[in-house]
Image (cartoon, rainbow, N blue to C red; front, side, top):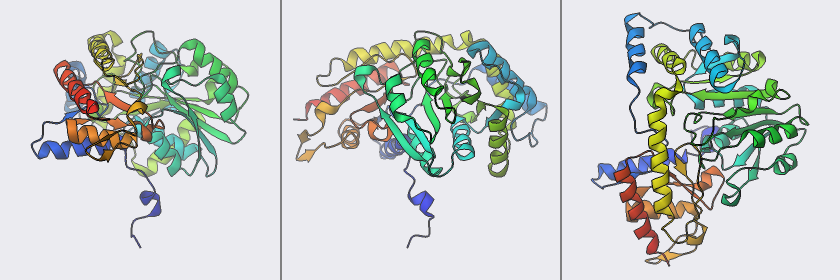
Length: 397
């Protein structure tokens, strides 16, 4: 019998981190691996953010902070929500955590009772499923595909919701598909949520600043459901601050208080220096990071063009984040050197071993016909990586 608790034994390893670890192991062996598996901007944190952190050190912000975060930083987040998203919050409705992932876990554990339903539109970020499982929820998936840009319809939502539905969790822009729900699409979904007043909506907007078409509409601005929307965000993606580990949520006072209570027993307040750096980031004009967004857009167009030259791949045009999520179903069931590629997991392992390119299987995102490719890499590396993918896929028959 294992000494490890069942809750850990039953927990799946993060698919993105698993592939990243395999890529690192091969690199350590001297292999020329190109990693397109992690969702991390390949930019450095802006200087003005680093300057704010240095100033915080000099000003001795080195003691325990309040559990939900410094009040002035929470006020800065309120102002950011108002300016960028049209959301009205007070500092008492903001909880700053150790990354947006931490914010999401706080929500699941603070709100979901065992057996209550968590609704996940697929594809979903891998950790949503793991978090809901840890909270002992009944998980209900809503399937989508490349033919509808990986977005659910109001009719699908209506069919999935019940009186036992507690949370609906989605990201907009979406990880892994890069899809972006429009204002009209979100209003149509909100009209369905109006019929189910017990269901809370978690809107993960961590990629809001990497949106290539329109401003990112927040479903929390829809008047009829705004008290039930929990908006999650952070500075990791938009400001290239993945290592600073700061995320935050805006919610009703009741929900924020519950998350604060939970956080107080697990981690207490988030890093003080990183909080002060976050204040500088969220107070800044988003135009300061426009260059990074335009670089991602240029890379997206390059990757789409190159992928479309690979026969058998289904590719749409994502409007946000820094991922493409091609349909690889035409390759499943094919073989090479006596090895049959039965699943997207098999395909990703084959691409890593044969082409030395790390991607992520769509199985852990709820879409077993797809793989995720991150284009948070240089144009030179992206061209070489897709050349390798094309050569490896051509060997399958």
